[in-house]
Image (tube, rainbow, N blue to C red; front, side, top):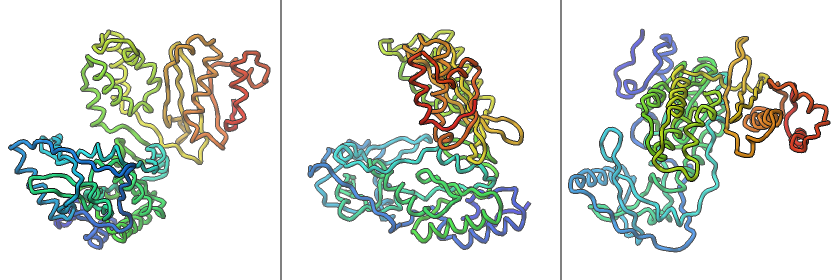
Length: 458
């Protein structure tokens, strides 16, 4: 098996061990050509500048928080490092936000700025954040993946000269202000998204979510040319890539908390391990945190809402903060753990294939599944579910089943709109609705909305 040459950049980059000698040579050639782009030092783009617009012409000045004596040496060293990088500069601004120290997972400290008061006066940006499902859908035919992160991504974007004084903060070395985009500004993510859209606008085989960038192709020649074009584009815009976060030409890759492989997506094993190790919560706050964690993967679990009903019922208004964790709750918790520990895999929806929608209603909720044929096997693309509202528990069986159809089509609307699809239900009386002769006013109202939905086959 060929080995990576002992250069610093190449030793830090993760390259697929499955490459042939000629493919590995192609990768080394690209790494040599773009050694200036693949560096831990942040670049400097001129493509965009961060602008801060305030609602009111009011000076924001907050008294600095006390810095522990044990952390003062760390703060001074960080400030000197930021000055050396050109990320901050000395300031005479009347504005001042305080330093706050945050402990990382490894126990070390991170220097942050508390911009909450400045953010309260900042005009929001209307730029929308891309949805993960929109990005995953683009990967359905890809088999080779390269992922990368920018080096200290925000610090590659300059703050407009006219706005820098807003970002001032007090340090043991005096008042400083940011020349590059700091973390914590409310409109920072919007500026970063604008940059990525401008930089990658003409690249069809690249998706990105903030600084996570994924190059995906279905063959080697396309991939190596795509990698070369991606790096040349970043160079043209003054951006650099972190070599420790550059993973090249893998058959599977981690992206947005998931493992993406050939036409499939699955939860990351390390994330599932954390869920399996969770203990039963004792308060509403702990329960909300638990449900928030497991809900990230709810599209992998059929009837998720029904399984978690005993737990979510504990969050109803009027229930005590300290919860009673019953045997039913524990059984529900274990069922979720089992469902996720079986390493569920979903196929990535393919817009060229026919979708099949299944819906079902139980006594307590609605379940739906989006499926497609893949290699002659009907496989799930995603699941959706919710509990019944109190009024819906009084619906008749046919009303519940019809509601399940409406819910299913609504949940998967992006995939189904403007195309034909197959709808499957185990409630045969629903066929009567096709005649348009239903006398139930609720069913009639729902049926009259059919003209707004895509064409369906029953």
